[in-house]
Image (cartoon, rainbow, N blue to C red; front, side, top):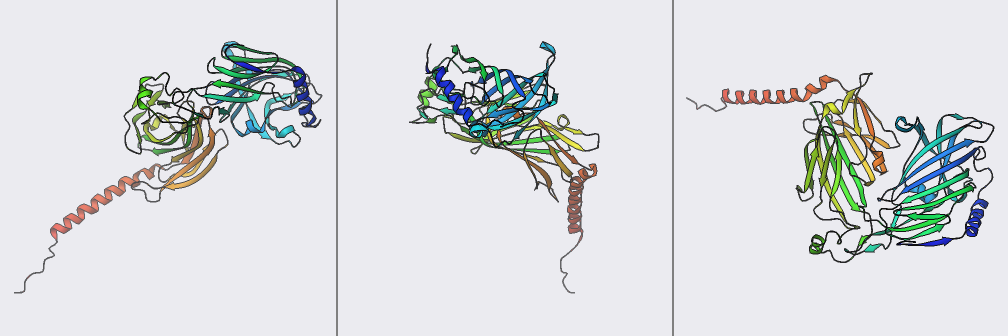
Length: 474
C-alpha cells in the first residue's frame, strides 16, 4: 500500500449503501432525469492547496423523446454550502484550436432530492434533441472543506488534514461509466478509504472505473494527508478605488489576514524558526505574493505600527508582482492586519462607451495568490459631479451607493459599493462601473482654489491700504 494504509469497503456493502440511498429518492425527482444519461464522467479533485478544485468532464446523451435544454448537477448540502464558484462550458474544436464556450449556471429547487442534495442547472446553448450527445466541462471550487487533524500542532509538527467526499459522482442521472482522480500535495498520505477498484500511484489516488451507477449513487470516502501549503484566509478585504480625471487611479486595500489551518500550540521560538527553516514552522507562512496590474507606481505597504520594509516589487509591461512579509510569521489561528496602496495610469482602465458613458474596467477578486476572502468590499469612488452610476459584475453581488467626502469636495463623491462573500482566485475577472460625467465639472475645484487665492490677495491689499487707526483730535 506504500506509505499509507486504506479502509476497505466491500462490494456488498457498497451495493447495500446504494440501495439505502436510492430508497430515499422518489422516482420523479427530476423531469429530465429519465431523459438524460451520462455516458462517461471523469472527475479530477485537486487537494494541493487550501482550496479544493474539482474538474468534471461529462459526456451526456438525450435518451428521451423530447428535447432537453438543461443539464442538472447535484451537490451534497455540505459541499453546496462551501461552494465558492461553479462554471460550465462546452468545448469546441480539436487540440490546439479547441475553445470553450461558457454556459449559464443557476441554482434550482427540487423538493424530492434525497438527503437534501442541492441542484444546479446548466443551460445548454441549444436544446439537445433525442439521441444527440454533448460534452460539458465543469469547474467548481470549495473553500473551508479541509479539516485539520490534529486540530492543534506545535511549531515543529507538520499539518495533516481530512478530505471528506464520495468515490462516486452524485448525479440525478444514470451514469454508465465513471472515474475519479484525487491529487494530494505530496506522497505523505496517512490513510484513505478503499472502494474497489482503488489504486494509488505517487501523489494520485484513483477510484474506478465504476459502471452502471443509479441516480444519486453515493459512497463516502476520507483521505488523511499532509498539507503544509499556506491556508491564507482574508477575513475582510476593503478595496477603495478612487478615480481622478486628472490622470491617476489610486487603489488602497485594507487586509485582515488569518492562518486558517491547524491552530498553533505551545511557545513560539524565533531561534528555532530561523535556525531550522525546513523543519520548524513548516505549516506556517511568512511571505505572500500579490499580483498587481501592470505599470503600477507609488506602491506602499504598512500596518498599524507604520511602514513595513520587507517587500519586493517586480514590475514590467505585462504584470507586477509584490512579494511581502508580515512583521512576524503566521501560524494556525494567528492574524495580521495591513494596508497595500498603489497608483495606476488612468488611461489603462477608464474608457468611453458608444453611448457616451465613462466606465472603469478593473479586476475583481483578491490579488493574493491562493487566498480565500470571507468578505470582499470594493468601493469605487467616482469624480465629484458623476451621475447615473451602475456596476456590471459577471456573478451575483450586493450593490449599494454611498457618498464620500474628500478635499475641496462640495456635494461629495458618489461611491459604488460592491460586496461579496466567499471569494476565490477564480473571481479575478474584469468588472465595469458606468457613469455619466460632464467635463466642465473638472473646473469646479480649480475655480474654487483660484477664487480662494483671489479673495485672500484682495483681503491682503485691502488690509494694507485701509487705515483703521483713530486719529487724535486737534
